[in-house]
Image (cartoon, rainbow, N blue to C red; front, side):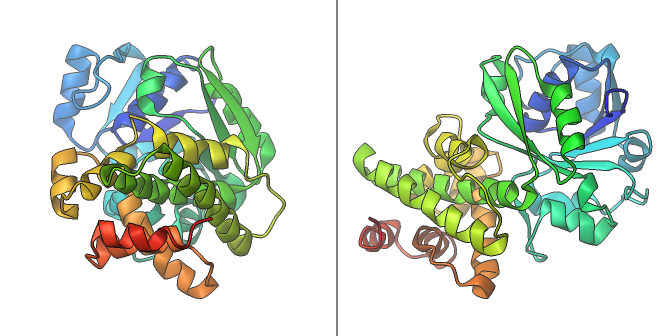
Length: 331
């Protein structure tokens, strides 16, 4: 179904770079959008992204580069968005091309601030994209391990499972295995929530809590995810699947996790702003916890770990005090 489709990647960070590598394993060429034209000049000259995954080299003859979002939208049948959720609306300000007939895939794992919408729902509401033409890339997969071609598993979620299966075939390789799902709400909310719990794990690490406590923290975290997604979108799903539990585990514990790193710095005494400044990367969990807090005002799901991260990041509560209080709520 999608074998001859023209694929466009919107974004130029580490995950966008990893997806470009994954796709070029199977497809002849891709379209790739960089907001900064200097970065395009660099990658054309040196064959790698100037800022991310510098060890990944590309055959640039197989890449059509764009720094005009309307041109890449016009010339692509599939658009994969890999812009941090906090900056998505700003990145789309210049988009005038009608994308309602495109297959839109979110690889963002965040919530659009102010609107408090998961990305798939945002594209449906703001751009008229039918849900059957919205896909989600989920699952435990760090860009750094893709660069090293370490075996990784992804889940492609779309209400139209034929489209999900067709796109999955485009990304499968010796180092990528792909599952399919029709649960775009659950996989996307789980992808958002796991970043919050990774921040929590990092805070606890920074406060010198040990592995025993971390195990309890994350076992409680998956229960929070289940309570929330079951309330927001009550369908039958296996929360133990790799798109849910697997993604939570790798984000909470991996050395490559920027959300865990952000939390660790906050736990060690950095202010939120100083941690963000030093990282030079976006920790989606920081933005997500405010959105989830606001969304949960409607659903009233018991989420003590999320509440603790919110209090630390937005209410300036001492991490040591907040986590000590949290320990009384965990089982």
